[in-house]
Image (tube, rainbow, N blue to C red; front, side, top):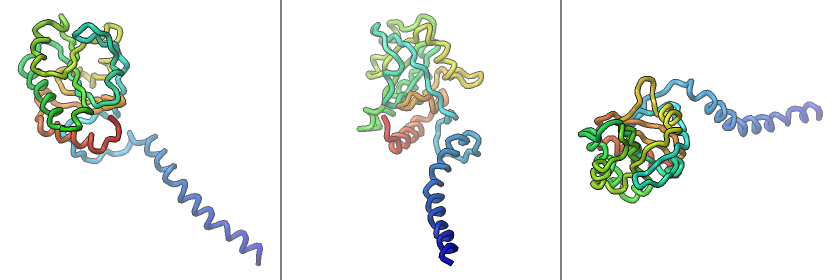
Length: 202
């Protein structure tokens, strides 16, 4: 009789162990197979990049001639705009939107950087530098030749190179959201407010 009781007394222990292990097992399975799970509707305005892509640590040449790296922009959110051609109406509007969106973030604006990456022939010229004097705080740079193929391979989506669009990079250096060439700035602002409110990084 005592033997039967002793065997039965292990049941609560096994139940407790199973309950303790369940969150870890469920979390591991989720992260391993999350890309295969059905995606529910999201409330974001921008198009999510799934899965997010870590951008390579490209070499950058700033407008003032200093050499930096893309990793220098980590630890903060980054609004990236790649210019291929002259900065015409859509380009100017997007630069304006980027400035106003950052300004509208109040104290959180210090968590956001802006970078204009110039891919156009001729690179950074005096006209472009003069234009950007209207948008203080925007960094302007070109990619080092050896960095271009790997960097643009990560930014490209199928046949789209995504030039001329606001691209959102998280503080870990991941390309994670993009917007139309002619976005609604109020909706972009809403997205960024939401991301920064739930993010503990950047």
